[in-house]
Amino acid sequence: MHIIHVASEIAPIAKVGGLADVVYGLCKELVRKNHEIEIILPKYDCIDLSHVQNLQIEKKELTPLTITWSLRYENLKIILLEPKEVNHFFNRETIYGLPDDIDRFLFFSNAVLEYLLHTKKKPDILHLHDWPTAFIAPLYKEKYKDLGVCIKGIVLTIHNMEHQGKCSSANLEKIVTNPKFYLTPDKLQDPFNPALFNLLKGGIEYADFITTVSPTYEKEAKTPEGGKGLDDRLRFHEKKFRGILNGIDTGYWNPEKDNKLTHHYSTDCPLSKRKFDKVLEGKKGNRKHLLSTLGMSESAAPLATAITRLVPQKAPELIRYSIERTLKNGGQYILLGSTNDPAIQNQFLELKKFYSNNKNVAILLNQNETVAHLIYAAADMFVIPSIFEPCGLTQMISMRYGTIPVVRLTGGLADTVFDIDTSTIAETKRNGFTFEYPDNKGIDWALDRAMECCSKNPQKWHKIMEQAMAIDFSWVSFAPKYVEIYEMLISKKARS
Ligand code: ADP
Image (cartoon, rainbow, N blue to C red):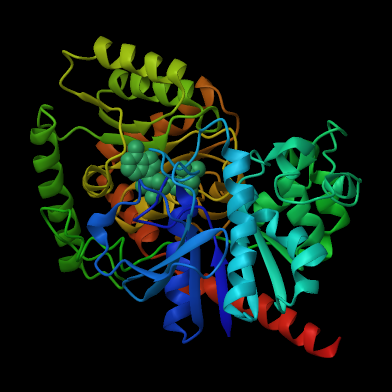
């Protein structure tokens, strides 16, 4: 199959969060299965070129809107579209968070269809991700299909219902001549404000299939609380809507070969006693290195961590509380958090100052891939108190590194973490500590049990580690579910 993914992020060259990891991991697995995969992104000036060897201009005058660049990253073919205007939408310092984000990604959506029109590529599947690319579905069906662009099926994956791309006709009229045509309840009209257009909704209405990133989030998105206004339309379209759990790239996230670690260890199962001892030894080595690099005191106390964007969805106030609680219980804590929100940034800067003389805490307020890998390997437990979490990758990465998740039961966390004491699934499949309500009591309940078990019951703790490490979160298990959808759409098209 020829599948083109269109996205605003891909790891590691243009990464903000999990969306980037998903596009990278899923596409790599699809290539491994011999599908023809291309990925189209905007050519951001902030792309991390240190990873890229053969970036080249492919076509300068192919389309009126953009210059086409191409590059290979590992086994992936990536196409970057650069606007021809000199001061353009993507020569900024960040991927999102700018006042004209809507115009930037509407331009990109249009540019992708222009690219397909002029290259005469006829992919079997166009796979879109989130609101920045969702408008491609309506624009294709209402305009570019008649101009000769030919696609057998469009899939939209929703990574987060919170961001929907709401805009006015002033935005849309830069792309289409008849914005009002789209302002109806079965097209782009926003359910909360009928004067606004909603780009994600447009994708939902027009895509041939919609997926989201975990089975529990699929259910949540169909409720008023989780659907953020679009639950009604997702219920209406439920026959073409499915939750598929994300995988992680177990080649990239591999403590046996991870070149960012100082000590390597294999968590691939079965784990003999000797291999398990190596896990403990490896984790200890990485911890020693990390603690000394961060100026923390070397201690055998439980080490808790959180690696996260600090945004309201991730419950920053509970992350802050989990630090306090860990210290009270005699543990150590490393927070690696990044945020664009100045108020949250200030709160955490204050906290960093407050703990500046405490050698049991490190608060790192930036995005740092190398340190993230070291923390996954060094820590005992990983705290995720999210208000909602469509899938969450950090709990899976943690388990791959033998670090036990302490999480709130929501979205994909509920599909991947099973409480050692209270879950109803088989004891051998339990792998962490969970709590239901996102409040301090919830943290106390889960974190206290985890810390007590870690410090006082090593036998039980090691069993949890073994059970967590035994789970296969690789894309090998999850990519076939997308292939099944692609094949279904292609055969449906052939019958029509
Ligand atoms: P989200 O997409 O909502 O941010 P996920 O759990 O799906 O959350 O994915 C988060 C990804 O981003 C993981 O790969 C995690 O390691 C990474 N990450 C988050 N914050 C940081 C940070 N401050 N530094 C480095 N990596 C980070």
